Image (cartoon, rainbow, N blue to C red; front, side):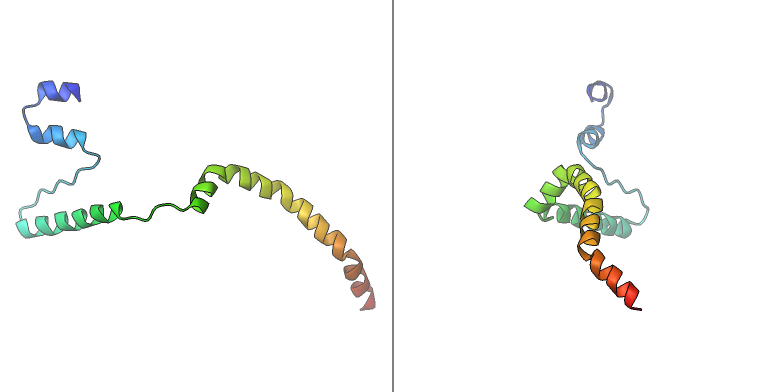
Length: 97
């Protein structure tokens, strides 16, 4: 940025370097250029109005790895508990046929 300040005479280059995004349109047809810039401007304004993240979303984002590990290690245990609970029913119904 400092080098650009010292070497550039064009203020537009400085503004583009400081901005987070740039939409530059070089067309011969002025109407298409204005339409495209309006679309980008409306899109950018819509980004500011995006809904804030909820508590649940932020919790899962922060603790996602921990939750996935808990589910990974707990699912075989839960499955084993279900099989043990219903093993008598499964064995009896298979012998009746």
